[in-house]
Length: 130
Image 1 (cartoon, rainbow, N blue to C red):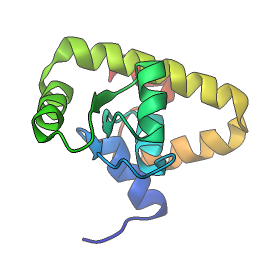
Image 2: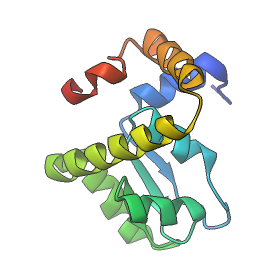
Image 3: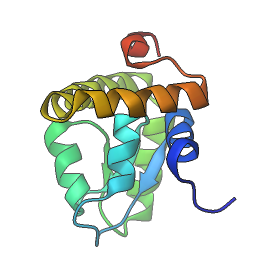
């Protein structure tokens, strides 16, 4: 369908089973960052700027850039390992809460409300039940 913006993009990220962003050239990938904030599991290349954040926060799945087998394994784990999903989800939630605490909470609440309204998903207060 092409690029998504605004509410459509947020709704897609909230509804995503996984977001894969295997770039090695992005200093900081905004797409996986937005996906984390929307509660979607992410798979990124270890060498990217986002990979460094994901690794430090343990908030997603990593694969070395160019290693197709490792990328497939990370995607499989992101989609099919309940234990890994739970651990990554909790760490992503912690990261999300730290980011919220350091940004304008009203702006974040507006984005959260838009995403949850469009996607029909639980809001941030319901994350423990997702």
